[in-house]
Length: 175
Image (cartoon, rainbow, N blue to C red):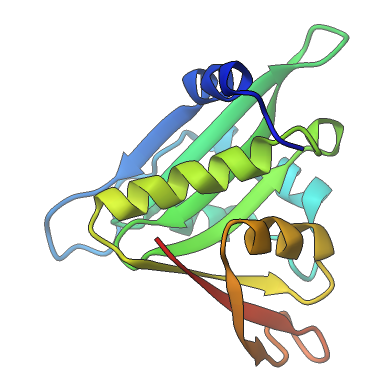
């Protein structure tokens, strides 16, 4: 789904943006988010991906502690009034790699994923990168289509990326 300019502007204004960048040789820094926020991210990860492909608390804590981590988050209100983490996108600003994109099932097909990935690509361009890469499971057609629409092209098959018999594609795009 394409968003109108006012809708896209509204979505961009509501995004929470955090970057973990220090100009040092340290690979890991203080995590970008608190433990309760990490737990929210883990729950959304479990909703979005099968167990063999979802990141656990330890992995997500490592990613948000990387020197170079970029994190975009969107919170939305459910019909019952509860505020939830509707989406997040985690990427590495130093190596220009997209790590994970999670959209709550109730908020899919609204242009959120396109906006989050576009925003991260713009940020990577600001950091001086001219290419970006990511890995996507070969059966994840919605994500593959989203990335194709953003200019990503399959470079090669990554056999057994998620374990025996569970392959992924390496995709790249020009920024």
